Image (cartoon, rainbow, N blue to C red; front, top):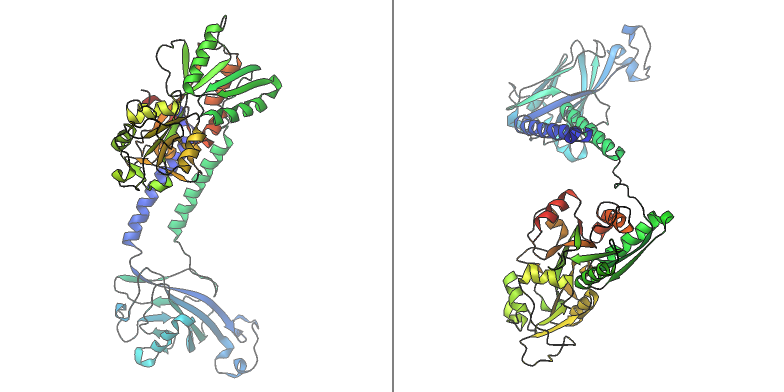
Length: 515
Protein backbone atom coordinates (compact mmCIF):
# COMPACT_ATOMS: atom_id res chain seq x y z
CA UNK A 1 0.00 0.00 0.00
CA UNK A 2 1.22 3.53 -0.79
CA UNK A 3 0.86 4.78 2.77
CA UNK A 4 3.32 2.13 3.99
CA UNK A 5 6.24 3.99 2.44
CA UNK A 6 9.45 4.41 4.41
CA UNK A 7 9.00 8.15 4.91
CA UNK A 8 5.42 7.67 6.14
CA UNK A 9 6.44 5.02 8.66
CA UNK A 10 9.29 7.18 9.98
CA UNK A 11 7.00 10.22 10.12
CA UNK A 12 4.30 8.32 12.05
CA UNK A 13 6.87 6.81 14.43
CA UNK A 14 8.38 10.26 15.03
CA UNK A 15 4.96 11.76 15.71
CA UNK A 16 4.00 8.96 18.14
CA UNK A 17 7.34 9.22 19.92
CA UNK A 18 6.96 13.00 20.12
CA UNK A 19 3.49 12.70 21.68
CA UNK A 20 4.63 10.09 24.21
CA UNK A 21 7.77 12.05 25.03
CA UNK A 22 5.75 15.24 25.49
CA UNK A 23 3.33 13.48 27.84
CA UNK A 24 6.20 12.03 29.86
CA UNK A 25 7.94 15.39 30.08
CA UNK A 26 4.70 17.10 31.17
CA UNK A 27 4.34 14.52 33.91
CA UNK A 28 7.98 14.92 34.86
CA UNK A 29 7.66 18.72 34.97
CA UNK A 30 4.65 18.40 37.27
CA UNK A 31 6.01 15.72 39.60
CA UNK A 32 9.80 16.09 39.82
CA UNK A 33 11.37 19.47 38.97
CA UNK A 34 9.07 21.33 41.36
CA UNK A 35 10.89 19.71 44.29
CA UNK A 36 13.63 21.55 46.16
CA UNK A 37 17.00 19.98 45.47
CA UNK A 38 20.55 20.46 46.67
CA UNK A 39 23.24 18.79 44.64
CA UNK A 40 26.91 18.40 45.44
CA UNK A 41 29.98 17.56 43.39
CA UNK A 42 33.57 16.71 44.36
CA UNK A 43 35.52 18.84 41.91
CA UNK A 44 38.96 18.20 43.37
CA UNK A 45 40.45 15.46 45.58
CA UNK A 46 44.26 15.39 45.41
CA UNK A 47 47.15 14.58 47.76
CA UNK A 48 49.63 17.24 48.85
CA UNK A 49 52.98 16.77 50.59
CA UNK A 50 55.03 13.57 50.30
CA UNK A 51 52.13 11.11 50.43
CA UNK A 52 54.31 8.49 52.18
CA UNK A 53 51.38 6.06 52.35
CA UNK A 54 51.84 5.19 48.68
CA UNK A 55 55.61 5.01 48.87
CA UNK A 56 55.83 7.72 46.23
CA UNK A 57 56.89 11.32 46.47
CA UNK A 58 54.26 13.23 44.53
CA UNK A 59 53.26 16.90 44.57
CA UNK A 60 56.44 17.77 46.43
CA UNK A 61 56.02 21.15 48.19
CA UNK A 62 58.33 23.43 50.15
CA UNK A 63 57.69 25.66 53.15
CA UNK A 64 54.84 25.00 55.52
CA UNK A 65 53.64 21.94 53.56
CA UNK A 66 56.72 20.15 54.95
CA UNK A 67 56.80 21.62 58.43
CA UNK A 68 53.12 21.79 59.47
CA UNK A 69 51.83 18.90 61.52
CA UNK A 70 50.04 16.18 59.58
CA UNK A 71 50.99 17.51 56.16
CA UNK A 72 52.99 14.47 55.11
CA UNK A 73 49.72 12.62 54.32
CA UNK A 74 47.52 15.65 53.62
CA UNK A 75 44.97 16.00 50.83
CA UNK A 76 42.85 18.80 49.39
CA UNK A 77 39.17 18.53 48.48
CA UNK A 78 37.08 21.08 46.56
CA UNK A 79 33.37 20.51 47.15
CA UNK A 80 30.65 22.39 45.21
CA UNK A 81 27.19 22.64 46.82
CA UNK A 82 24.41 24.01 44.59
CA UNK A 83 20.66 24.54 44.25
CA UNK A 84 19.97 22.57 41.06
CA UNK A 85 16.21 22.34 41.55
CA UNK A 86 13.44 24.63 40.30
CA UNK A 87 12.64 26.39 43.60
CA UNK A 88 14.55 28.65 45.95
CA UNK A 89 15.66 27.14 49.27
CA UNK A 90 15.27 29.12 52.50
CA UNK A 91 16.73 28.58 55.96
CA UNK A 92 13.50 27.04 57.19
CA UNK A 93 13.60 24.38 54.44
CA UNK A 94 16.47 22.58 56.19
CA UNK A 95 15.13 19.86 58.53
CA UNK A 96 18.37 18.60 60.11
CA UNK A 97 18.53 18.67 63.93
CA UNK A 98 20.76 21.34 65.42
CA UNK A 99 21.80 24.72 64.09
CA UNK A 100 23.50 23.40 60.97
CA UNK A 101 21.68 22.38 57.78
CA UNK A 102 23.98 19.87 56.06
CA UNK A 103 26.69 17.41 57.14
CA UNK A 104 29.73 16.36 55.09
CA UNK A 105 31.47 13.11 55.98
CA UNK A 106 35.10 12.58 54.81
CA UNK A 107 35.48 9.01 56.06
CA UNK A 108 38.79 8.27 57.80
CA UNK A 109 40.31 11.64 57.01
CA UNK A 110 40.59 14.46 59.54
CA UNK A 111 39.67 18.05 58.72
CA UNK A 112 42.55 20.51 59.24
CA UNK A 113 40.94 23.62 57.76
CA UNK A 114 38.09 24.91 55.57
CA UNK A 115 37.84 27.87 53.21
CA UNK A 116 34.49 29.06 51.81
CA UNK A 117 34.29 30.62 48.31
CA UNK A 118 31.35 31.88 46.27
CA UNK A 119 30.88 33.98 43.11
CA UNK A 120 30.60 37.76 43.48
CA UNK A 121 26.79 37.94 42.94
CA UNK A 122 26.30 35.71 46.02
CA UNK A 123 29.13 37.03 48.20
CA UNK A 124 26.57 37.82 50.91
CA UNK A 125 26.33 34.10 51.66
CA UNK A 126 29.61 34.29 53.59
CA UNK A 127 27.66 35.89 56.42
CA UNK A 128 26.04 32.52 57.17
CA UNK A 129 29.31 30.66 57.76
CA UNK A 130 29.77 31.37 61.47
CA UNK A 131 30.04 29.08 64.51
CA UNK A 132 26.85 30.63 65.87
CA UNK A 133 24.97 29.29 62.84
CA UNK A 134 26.43 25.81 63.13
CA UNK A 135 29.54 26.08 60.91
CA UNK A 136 32.32 23.89 62.27
CA UNK A 137 34.30 20.66 61.96
CA UNK A 138 35.05 17.74 64.23
CA UNK A 139 37.29 14.91 63.07
CA UNK A 140 36.15 13.94 59.61
CA UNK A 141 32.74 15.61 59.91
CA UNK A 142 31.97 19.10 58.60
CA UNK A 143 28.77 20.92 59.58
CA UNK A 144 27.42 23.34 56.96
CA UNK A 145 25.02 26.13 58.05
CA UNK A 146 21.47 26.60 56.79
CA UNK A 147 22.46 28.66 53.74
CA UNK A 148 19.54 30.09 51.68
CA UNK A 149 20.11 29.42 47.97
CA UNK A 150 18.20 30.80 44.99
CA UNK A 151 17.79 28.65 41.90
CA UNK A 152 21.22 28.00 40.37
CA UNK A 153 23.10 29.56 43.32
CA UNK A 154 26.08 27.69 44.78
CA UNK A 155 29.08 27.94 47.06
CA UNK A 156 32.31 25.96 47.31
CA UNK A 157 34.20 24.50 50.24
CA UNK A 158 37.97 24.03 49.97
CA UNK A 159 38.87 21.52 52.69
CA UNK A 160 42.36 20.61 53.92
CA UNK A 161 42.49 17.03 55.24
CA UNK A 162 44.99 14.60 56.70
CA UNK A 163 45.05 10.84 57.02
CA UNK A 164 42.79 8.44 55.21
CA UNK A 165 43.15 7.92 51.48
CA UNK A 166 42.57 10.20 48.52
CA UNK A 167 39.46 9.08 46.65
CA UNK A 168 37.63 7.79 49.71
CA UNK A 169 33.87 8.28 49.60
CA UNK A 170 32.74 11.80 50.47
CA UNK A 171 29.09 12.09 51.41
CA UNK A 172 26.83 15.12 51.95
CA UNK A 173 23.72 14.44 54.04
CA UNK A 174 20.74 16.53 55.02
CA UNK A 175 16.96 16.77 54.99
CA UNK A 176 14.95 19.29 52.97
CA UNK A 177 11.26 20.03 53.33
CA UNK A 178 9.62 18.59 50.17
CA UNK A 179 13.05 18.12 48.67
CA UNK A 180 16.19 16.04 48.49
CA UNK A 181 19.98 16.14 48.69
CA UNK A 182 21.75 14.20 45.95
CA UNK A 183 25.13 13.75 44.39
CA UNK A 184 25.88 15.04 40.89
CA UNK A 185 28.54 13.62 38.66
CA UNK A 186 32.07 14.88 39.18
CA UNK A 187 33.17 17.83 37.08
CA UNK A 188 36.12 20.11 36.62
CA UNK A 189 36.11 23.29 38.73
CA UNK A 190 34.91 25.46 35.85
CA UNK A 191 32.40 23.05 34.37
CA UNK A 192 28.69 23.81 34.75
CA UNK A 193 26.12 21.27 35.84
CA UNK A 194 24.37 19.50 32.97
CA UNK A 195 21.42 21.51 31.66
CA UNK A 196 19.24 18.49 30.90
CA UNK A 197 18.75 15.20 32.65
CA UNK A 198 19.84 11.92 31.12
CA UNK A 199 16.23 11.07 30.20
CA UNK A 200 15.72 14.43 28.49
CA UNK A 201 18.95 14.03 26.53
CA UNK A 202 17.98 10.51 25.46
CA UNK A 203 14.55 11.67 24.23
CA UNK A 204 16.09 14.61 22.38
CA UNK A 205 18.71 12.43 20.67
CA UNK A 206 16.08 9.85 19.66
CA UNK A 207 13.74 12.45 18.20
CA UNK A 208 16.63 14.13 16.38
CA UNK A 209 17.68 10.83 14.82
CA UNK A 210 14.11 10.19 13.67
CA UNK A 211 13.83 13.63 12.10
CA UNK A 212 17.22 13.26 10.39
CA UNK A 213 16.20 9.86 9.04
CA UNK A 214 12.96 11.30 7.69
CA UNK A 215 14.83 14.21 6.09
CA UNK A 216 17.31 11.85 4.43
CA UNK A 217 14.49 9.75 2.99
CA UNK A 218 12.61 12.79 1.72
CA UNK A 219 15.71 14.38 0.18
CA UNK A 220 16.92 11.13 -1.32
CA UNK A 221 13.66 10.27 -3.03
CA UNK A 222 12.97 11.64 -6.48
CA UNK A 223 10.58 14.57 -6.10
CA UNK A 224 11.18 15.95 -9.57
CA UNK A 225 8.01 16.68 -11.56
CA UNK A 226 6.82 13.91 -13.85
CA UNK A 227 8.70 13.71 -17.14
CA UNK A 228 7.14 15.31 -20.17
CA UNK A 229 7.26 14.31 -23.78
CA UNK A 230 8.68 17.34 -25.54
CA UNK A 231 7.09 18.16 -28.86
CA UNK A 232 8.00 20.58 -31.61
CA UNK A 233 5.79 22.83 -33.70
CA UNK A 234 3.91 26.07 -33.10
CA UNK A 235 1.30 26.86 -30.44
CA UNK A 236 -0.70 30.00 -29.70
CA UNK A 237 -1.88 30.77 -26.16
CA UNK A 238 -4.68 33.29 -25.85
CA UNK A 239 -7.38 34.41 -23.43
CA UNK A 240 -6.94 35.70 -19.87
CA UNK A 241 -4.78 38.80 -19.43
CA UNK A 242 -4.61 38.10 -15.67
CA UNK A 243 -2.96 34.71 -16.30
CA UNK A 244 -0.78 35.94 -19.17
CA UNK A 245 2.37 36.51 -17.05
CA UNK A 246 2.25 32.87 -15.97
CA UNK A 247 1.84 31.68 -19.56
CA UNK A 248 4.77 33.76 -20.81
CA UNK A 249 7.14 32.42 -18.16
CA UNK A 250 6.02 28.80 -18.55
CA UNK A 251 6.27 29.08 -22.36
CA UNK A 252 9.86 30.35 -22.11
CA UNK A 253 10.72 27.56 -19.68
CA UNK A 254 9.18 24.91 -21.92
CA UNK A 255 11.10 26.19 -24.95
CA UNK A 256 14.37 26.02 -22.99
CA UNK A 257 13.69 22.54 -21.60
CA UNK A 258 12.63 21.21 -25.01
CA UNK A 259 14.94 23.23 -27.26
CA UNK A 260 16.05 20.11 -29.13
CA UNK A 261 12.50 19.76 -30.51
CA UNK A 262 12.41 23.47 -31.46
CA UNK A 263 8.93 24.43 -30.14
CA UNK A 264 7.57 27.95 -30.76
CA UNK A 265 4.90 29.21 -28.31
CA UNK A 266 3.21 32.60 -28.72
CA UNK A 267 1.23 34.28 -25.93
CA UNK A 268 -1.50 36.55 -27.32
CA UNK A 269 -3.84 37.51 -24.44
CA UNK A 270 -6.89 39.69 -25.15
CA UNK A 271 -9.26 38.63 -22.35
CA UNK A 272 -11.04 35.40 -21.47
CA UNK A 273 -14.11 35.89 -23.67
CA UNK A 274 -12.09 37.02 -26.69
CA UNK A 275 -9.78 34.01 -26.24
CA UNK A 276 -12.63 31.51 -26.16
CA UNK A 277 -14.18 33.04 -29.27
CA UNK A 278 -10.82 32.93 -31.06
CA UNK A 279 -10.41 29.25 -30.14
CA UNK A 280 -13.92 28.40 -31.33
CA UNK A 281 -13.31 30.25 -34.62
CA UNK A 282 -9.96 28.48 -35.16
CA UNK A 283 -11.58 25.11 -34.50
CA UNK A 284 -14.40 25.83 -36.93
CA UNK A 285 -11.91 26.80 -39.66
CA UNK A 286 -9.69 23.77 -39.14
CA UNK A 287 -10.25 21.10 -41.75
CA UNK A 288 -9.69 18.27 -39.26
CA UNK A 289 -8.46 17.72 -35.74
CA UNK A 290 -7.74 20.25 -33.03
CA UNK A 291 -6.03 23.55 -33.93
CA UNK A 292 -2.77 24.51 -32.20
CA UNK A 293 -4.54 27.04 -29.97
CA UNK A 294 -5.15 26.98 -26.20
CA UNK A 295 -7.44 29.57 -24.58
CA UNK A 296 -7.09 30.45 -20.88
CA UNK A 297 -10.22 31.63 -19.13
CA UNK A 298 -10.88 33.10 -15.67
CA UNK A 299 -13.77 30.80 -14.92
CA UNK A 300 -15.78 28.33 -17.00
CA UNK A 301 -16.78 28.88 -20.60
CA UNK A 302 -20.20 30.29 -21.43
CA UNK A 303 -22.91 28.05 -22.83
CA UNK A 304 -23.12 27.29 -26.53
CA UNK A 305 -19.53 26.12 -27.00
CA UNK A 306 -19.78 22.34 -26.62
CA UNK A 307 -16.66 21.66 -28.71
CA UNK A 308 -14.35 23.34 -26.17
CA UNK A 309 -12.75 20.88 -23.77
CA UNK A 310 -11.71 22.15 -20.31
CA UNK A 311 -8.54 21.55 -18.31
CA UNK A 312 -8.43 22.92 -14.77
CA UNK A 313 -5.10 24.60 -14.15
CA UNK A 314 -5.14 26.70 -10.98
CA UNK A 315 -7.15 28.60 -8.40
CA UNK A 316 -6.75 32.34 -8.97
CA UNK A 317 -7.51 34.92 -6.29
CA UNK A 318 -8.67 38.43 -7.16
CA UNK A 319 -8.93 41.58 -5.08
CA UNK A 320 -11.02 44.70 -4.81
CA UNK A 321 -8.75 47.75 -4.55
CA UNK A 322 -9.45 51.32 -3.48
CA UNK A 323 -7.50 54.54 -3.56
CA UNK A 324 -5.60 55.13 -0.31
CA UNK A 325 -7.61 58.29 0.36
CA UNK A 326 -10.77 56.20 0.88
CA UNK A 327 -9.26 54.81 4.11
CA UNK A 328 -11.62 51.81 4.37
CA UNK A 329 -10.03 48.36 4.81
CA UNK A 330 -13.06 46.07 4.85
CA UNK A 331 -16.43 45.97 3.12
CA UNK A 332 -19.31 43.57 3.44
CA UNK A 333 -20.51 41.81 0.32
CA UNK A 334 -23.80 43.64 0.75
CA UNK A 335 -22.09 47.05 0.66
CA UNK A 336 -20.07 46.05 -2.42
CA UNK A 337 -23.31 45.14 -4.22
CA UNK A 338 -24.85 48.47 -3.23
CA UNK A 339 -21.79 50.29 -4.57
CA UNK A 340 -21.99 48.55 -7.92
CA UNK A 341 -25.73 49.12 -8.20
CA UNK A 342 -25.06 52.85 -7.88
CA UNK A 343 -26.84 53.14 -4.54
CA UNK A 344 -23.85 54.72 -2.75
CA UNK A 345 -22.44 57.90 -4.26
CA UNK A 346 -20.05 59.00 -1.49
CA UNK A 347 -17.65 56.95 0.64
CA UNK A 348 -18.78 58.77 3.79
CA UNK A 349 -21.99 56.72 3.62
CA UNK A 350 -19.88 53.66 4.48
CA UNK A 351 -17.73 55.37 7.10
CA UNK A 352 -14.97 56.37 4.72
CA UNK A 353 -13.66 59.73 3.56
CA UNK A 354 -15.91 62.41 2.10
CA UNK A 355 -15.12 61.49 -1.52
CA UNK A 356 -17.39 60.70 -4.49
CA UNK A 357 -17.39 57.06 -5.60
CA UNK A 358 -15.68 56.27 -8.95
CA UNK A 359 -16.23 52.71 -10.22
CA UNK A 360 -13.25 51.68 -12.41
CA UNK A 361 -14.19 48.47 -14.22
CA UNK A 362 -12.87 46.21 -16.95
CA UNK A 363 -14.46 45.76 -20.38
CA UNK A 364 -17.25 43.23 -20.88
CA UNK A 365 -14.88 40.56 -22.26
CA UNK A 366 -12.69 40.50 -19.14
CA UNK A 367 -12.58 37.28 -17.18
CA UNK A 368 -11.69 39.23 -14.04
CA UNK A 369 -14.92 41.19 -14.42
CA UNK A 370 -16.97 38.07 -15.12
CA UNK A 371 -15.62 36.40 -11.98
CA UNK A 372 -16.45 39.53 -9.97
CA UNK A 373 -19.99 39.61 -11.29
CA UNK A 374 -20.50 35.88 -10.74
CA UNK A 375 -18.75 35.37 -7.37
CA UNK A 376 -19.36 38.70 -5.62
CA UNK A 377 -22.15 40.74 -7.23
CA UNK A 378 -24.40 37.92 -8.31
CA UNK A 379 -25.42 40.06 -11.30
CA UNK A 380 -23.98 42.31 -14.00
CA UNK A 381 -22.60 45.78 -13.39
CA UNK A 382 -24.57 48.92 -14.20
CA UNK A 383 -23.94 50.77 -17.48
CA UNK A 384 -20.77 52.82 -17.78
CA UNK A 385 -21.25 56.57 -17.56
CA UNK A 386 -17.78 57.97 -18.14
CA UNK A 387 -14.94 57.73 -20.64
CA UNK A 388 -12.21 59.36 -18.56
CA UNK A 389 -13.33 57.81 -15.22
CA UNK A 390 -13.49 61.33 -13.73
CA UNK A 391 -16.55 63.09 -15.22
CA UNK A 392 -20.06 61.80 -15.91
CA UNK A 393 -20.91 61.68 -19.58
CA UNK A 394 -24.48 60.80 -18.57
CA UNK A 395 -25.75 63.35 -16.01
CA UNK A 396 -28.56 60.99 -14.99
CA UNK A 397 -26.16 58.22 -13.95
CA UNK A 398 -26.08 57.67 -10.16
CA UNK A 399 -22.26 57.37 -10.01
CA UNK A 400 -19.21 57.66 -12.25
CA UNK A 401 -18.38 54.29 -13.83
CA UNK A 402 -15.86 53.66 -16.59
CA UNK A 403 -14.47 50.58 -18.37
CA UNK A 404 -10.80 50.02 -19.23
CA UNK A 405 -9.04 47.48 -21.44
CA UNK A 406 -6.41 46.04 -19.09
CA UNK A 407 -5.62 45.32 -15.45
CA UNK A 408 -2.67 47.73 -15.50
CA UNK A 409 -4.94 50.56 -16.64
CA UNK A 410 -7.38 49.80 -13.82
CA UNK A 411 -4.65 49.81 -11.16
CA UNK A 412 -3.03 53.01 -12.46
CA UNK A 413 -6.39 54.80 -12.53
CA UNK A 414 -7.44 53.68 -9.03
CA UNK A 415 -4.06 54.70 -7.60
CA UNK A 416 -4.27 58.19 -9.16
CA UNK A 417 -7.97 58.97 -8.65
CA UNK A 418 -9.25 59.77 -5.11
CA UNK A 419 -12.44 57.87 -4.36
CA UNK A 420 -11.80 55.21 -7.02
CA UNK A 421 -12.48 51.49 -6.59
CA UNK A 422 -11.58 48.68 -8.99
CA UNK A 423 -10.59 45.04 -9.16
CA UNK A 424 -7.60 43.01 -10.30
CA UNK A 425 -5.89 39.65 -10.11
CA UNK A 426 -4.28 39.57 -6.65
CA UNK A 427 -0.64 39.21 -7.64
CA UNK A 428 -0.79 42.32 -9.83
CA UNK A 429 -1.82 44.44 -6.85
CA UNK A 430 1.14 43.55 -4.64
CA UNK A 431 3.63 46.40 -4.56
CA UNK A 432 1.36 48.94 -6.29
CA UNK A 433 1.49 52.29 -4.51
CA UNK A 434 -1.44 54.65 -3.99
CA UNK A 435 -4.04 51.93 -3.39
CA UNK A 436 -4.74 49.03 -1.07
CA UNK A 437 -6.71 45.78 -1.05
CA UNK A 438 -10.06 45.34 0.68
CA UNK A 439 -11.18 42.49 2.88
CA UNK A 440 -14.59 41.08 2.05
CA UNK A 441 -16.76 40.22 5.06
CA UNK A 442 -13.56 40.25 7.12
CA UNK A 443 -11.73 37.69 4.95
CA UNK A 444 -8.46 38.81 3.33
CA UNK A 445 -7.58 38.14 -0.32
CA UNK A 446 -4.95 35.48 0.50
CA UNK A 447 -3.98 32.35 -1.42
CA UNK A 448 -2.44 30.81 1.73
CA UNK A 449 -5.57 31.38 3.81
CA UNK A 450 -7.78 29.82 1.12
CA UNK A 451 -5.39 26.90 0.63
CA UNK A 452 -5.35 26.09 4.35
CA UNK A 453 -9.11 26.40 4.70
CA UNK A 454 -9.04 29.39 7.07
CA UNK A 455 -10.87 31.80 4.75
CA UNK A 456 -14.12 31.78 2.77
CA UNK A 457 -13.02 34.74 0.64
CA UNK A 458 -15.43 34.72 -2.32
CA UNK A 459 -13.56 36.61 -5.07
CA UNK A 460 -11.66 33.65 -6.52
CA UNK A 461 -12.03 31.40 -9.50
CA UNK A 462 -10.60 28.38 -11.27
CA UNK A 463 -8.32 29.15 -14.19
CA UNK A 464 -9.31 26.93 -17.13
CA UNK A 465 -7.33 26.01 -20.22
CA UNK A 466 -9.57 25.14 -23.19
CA UNK A 467 -8.77 23.23 -26.34
CA UNK A 468 -10.98 22.61 -29.34
CA UNK A 469 -11.77 18.94 -28.83
CA UNK A 470 -9.01 16.65 -27.60
CA UNK A 471 -5.60 17.46 -29.13
CA UNK A 472 -3.46 14.45 -30.15
CA UNK A 473 -1.29 13.00 -27.38
CA UNK A 474 1.87 13.74 -29.39
CA UNK A 475 0.90 17.35 -30.13
CA UNK A 476 2.61 20.45 -28.72
CA UNK A 477 -0.71 21.56 -27.19
CA UNK A 478 -1.11 18.32 -25.22
CA UNK A 479 2.53 18.29 -24.12
CA UNK A 480 2.44 21.95 -23.01
CA UNK A 481 -0.76 21.49 -20.99
CA UNK A 482 0.80 18.54 -19.14
CA UNK A 483 3.91 20.63 -18.49
CA UNK A 484 1.80 23.57 -17.27
CA UNK A 485 -0.62 21.68 -15.02
CA UNK A 486 1.43 18.75 -13.71
CA UNK A 487 5.06 19.43 -14.51
CA UNK A 488 7.53 22.26 -13.95
CA UNK A 489 4.82 24.81 -14.69
CA UNK A 490 3.40 24.26 -11.19
CA UNK A 491 6.36 26.11 -9.66
CA UNK A 492 5.75 29.09 -11.93
CA UNK A 493 2.04 29.09 -11.10
CA UNK A 494 2.87 29.28 -7.39
CA UNK A 495 5.43 32.06 -7.76
CA UNK A 496 2.76 34.16 -9.48
CA UNK A 497 0.37 33.78 -6.54
CA UNK A 498 -1.91 31.03 -7.83
CA UNK A 499 -2.62 27.58 -6.40
CA UNK A 500 -2.04 24.71 -8.87
CA UNK A 501 -5.01 22.38 -9.23
CA UNK A 502 -2.81 19.27 -9.29
CA UNK A 503 -1.58 19.60 -5.71
CA UNK A 504 -3.43 17.78 -2.88
CA UNK A 505 -5.00 21.02 -1.63
CA UNK A 506 -5.60 22.30 -5.15
CA UNK A 507 -7.43 19.15 -6.24
CA UNK A 508 -9.97 19.61 -3.46
CA UNK A 509 -10.44 23.34 -4.06
CA UNK A 510 -10.71 22.99 -7.83
CA UNK A 511 -13.38 20.33 -7.42
CA UNK A 512 -15.26 22.22 -4.71
CA UNK A 513 -15.25 25.61 -6.46
CA UNK A 514 -16.84 24.25 -9.62
CA UNK A 515 -20.06 26.24 -10.21
